[in-house]
Length: 359
Image (tube, rainbow, N blue to C red; front, side, top):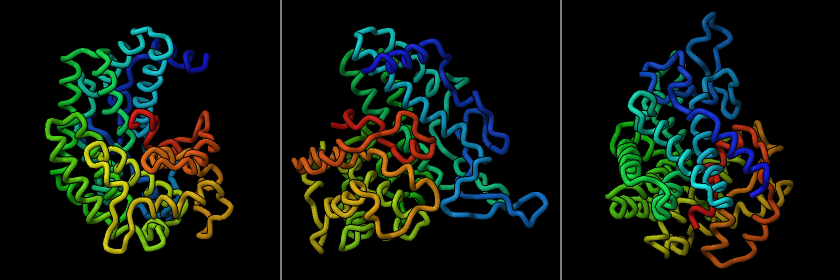
């Protein structure tokens, strides 16, 4: 850990704990404790005086849309991992004390906490107050259960806090599985369905029903995602249809591999499972890896926005290297560089912030 990293941790130590109530969403129909976001690719209709209802411009982010709560999720994860790293580097337990205080404020404080549900995410002015596909917003939190378990095993957080934070993630996991929004998202035919099952698998790490939930997720991976979302050549056709085919293709493989990484703790053969065509996760990884190594070779056209910043440093390469004992993936991963200060869009498209937490 560099001196700058320690300096960043020290800044977090002095800052107030972030909370969802810090930023009030003017269009939200929920309470101050409800997460809210505007749909990313929706814009005011220029032909209407009030701009309503909004119209879709797929792939083009509207910078005026409310995204402060999205930013908070990123901040909570980044701050937590920075504080944990500072503790590991220095042995100073004040860092993990601040980490616990921040998480306690954001998730558990009665007046300031974020509710364990998402009813108002990716709303569209003039059309809806929230949507099922908005559940993808909390994908940013998937590192936290693994970090919390590390802290718990090392005796760095209190028993009462651990039980309470486990209850929050258990309740939110139930929302993802059982609510109408959650069930609708589970039936999507692209990265959205993979994303919600990845969240369910990650958050259920802190649930007493983890074993049954992981079985449910593994069944979905084997019997739906592999046969229905991976083409014979390993491409993911639903992602190639988008106006950002490169980023969405990388993103979908990142989700698949991270889901496999989590579930392989219980089902290690998932990495090698194949459908009736003989196709499995590795086919998708091997399709996209050469284009991560050499973006110039990508044959499907540039993304509508953000193409120059890609591919980032996707964790699926590290996970594949570990699963398949193949240093070729590791060689590609090692040559990539994650930006010191990535754009928020880039950051959101990389849900795994610290892949070593999973390995």
